[in-house]
Image (tube, rainbow, N blue to C red; front, side, top):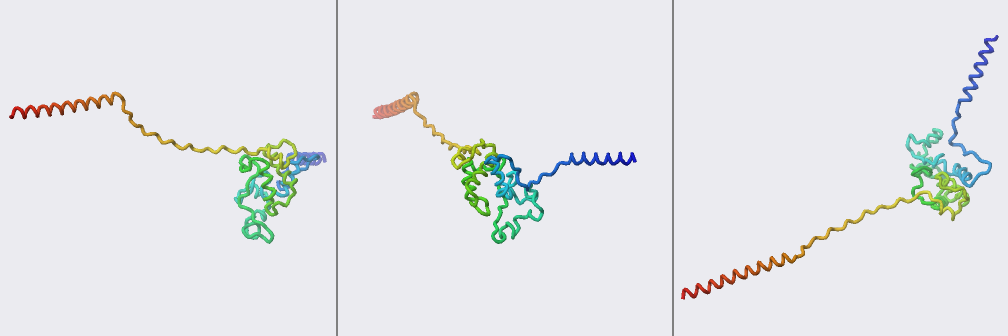
Length: 227
């Protein structure tokens, strides 16, 4: 009897320890947790999950058709082939839409590189997103998503984002465009006659003139002797 009780006690203790050590696997498809007093960015996180996450990823990492794509692998196997014909490929289902094979990342060091301010993001998504029904959300919802993305980029100060204040939220600093300078052709050096050169030329002229004079004089004297 005592042995049986001892074995049951050990088994119960072991099961409890294993249950405490087990780390639950987070459901990355689930909605983000709610908070008691949500900020504009918190509300944007819920809207992002509902309208943006299916394509842009739970971490804003984007989506590709690569076999080892991290976000794609989170879906059930039957939902991982978005680009097949009849789903979200070139020939989607009736009233469906086509998903690009490279859905860009929205969060991360290289994300939103073409958007300088949060206003650029807001002005784009309010007319182009969600892809299946562009412009279908209220302006306040687009601003909330903009606040969420700004917070993800560590650019949000906690103040409510408006269409005006979004201009002051800098997401990416444009890199300066380096323009190679046009090489300046080297000027051809033109020899400037110096005084010494001029004097030398004059001496040669005088010497040549003297020789010519002597030749003429000699010719005259020679003729006189012949006569």
